[in-house]
Amino acid sequence: MTGSDIIAAVSTAPGRGGIGVVRVSGPRLKALISGIVRKRVSPRRATLADFIDSHGSVIDRGIALYFPAPRSYTGEDVLELHGHGGPVVLQLLLKRCVELGARPAQPGEFTRRAYLNDKIDLAQAESVVDLIEAATTEAARSAMRSLQGAFSQRIGELLDGLVELRTLVEAALDFPDEDVELIRQSDGAGRLSRLKAKLADVLSVSQQGSLLREGMRVVLAGQPNVGKSSLLNLLAGEELAIVTDIAGTTRDAIRQSVSIRGVPAHIIDTAGLRPSSDPVERLGIARTWAAIEQANVVVLLVDAAQGDVAADQDILRRLPAGLPRLTVMNKIDLLARAPALERGKDGSTVWLSAKTGAGVEFLREALLEAVGWQGGGAEGLFMARERHVHALELAQQHLEQATRQTESLELFAEELRAVQTALGSITGEFTPDDLLGEIFKRFCIGK
Image 1 (cartoon, rainbow, N blue to C red):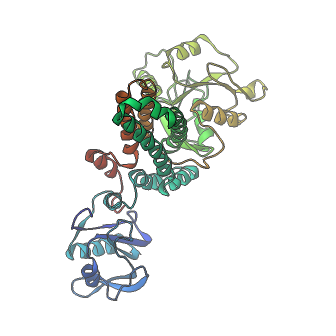
Image 2: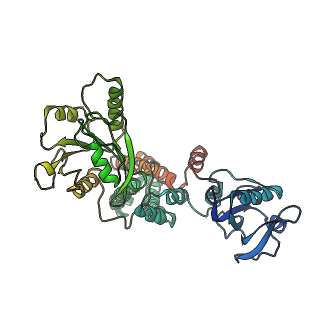
Image 3: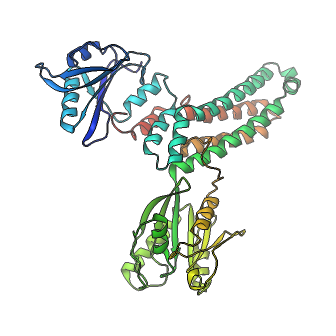
């Protein structure tokens, strides 16, 4: 158990609603329950009752749910009071819980107790927030799969195979006269190869899940009046940016989040890139380059009627090395040209009209390809965070090092230990307290 104190919080979102919930967790809640609920409450049965204050006056009337430890969300005794969703009445209920010995919960404290009491692992705990914050249907489904343990199961399978290999290596170290023969007979090389393949597969799926969680940052860049604002409006489905024939209309970055076939995309419309003596426009241009530095993919818009001119080539040369880029030949409606997607080794080119919408599906397809989305929907994916991907990449690096250390069993064993530490940090087997604090402080209060 995590301590002897009782915590309480309003678990529903701030504001008015039809229903509001106050959640309480801690040891031995029966005294608190009898002090606030004017009726006997049976475990795991919804009880309609009055909720009373210290003078016996009714604060509210609603449903009381009691979950005795350890069969509860946190692993402790848990009480939920479901009443009317007004902020005043919920604060009165919370105040009454505090009078009866509870203290206000910290952000994420209920889920942290669930983790510390082995109800869920760390990856599942993080998926709680991911489910709440999911920006698309596919992201929500992937977060739910993580919460149900799909990601943790894959990590567990990796750890099981790794432990078997480490056991074999440690046994060989204990019998140095038979070390090579023992590993050969136990198919040590085959075990290592299968482990590497499984890790590569989990890393690939995790990168897809991370993309679903974080979304892709797409910067629309190009000269003035090539249609960047029109394209933003088209992708967003509404008139967000002002569109005129006057060059330099957009002075600052305009950001909008959209869904591209279920993948969140953060689209940034930027100031046109050109030499300028206007200090305000120059500031906007500087912000454009700053946004490009943070992008996952940059879309260079070109006026198809003018073609790819020297100024466009200058922009391409200034783009950061290795940054995925797309070229969009816009305004094909003025050329009576059909929309198209042309793939090349230096990036794809999309022919479209931001005015009519012709070819926008080609752009969506090219964007997903540029960030490595494998397609086929999110079925089977699980939600992953950047720290998960980093831990898997670190494990992969140590596993590659282990492959090169097979002639020295001591070094081989040390690299395998590092792999286990990296994988264990995902589910919380090896996680420092400061990281736990950083993770759970991002939760909302009441969760």
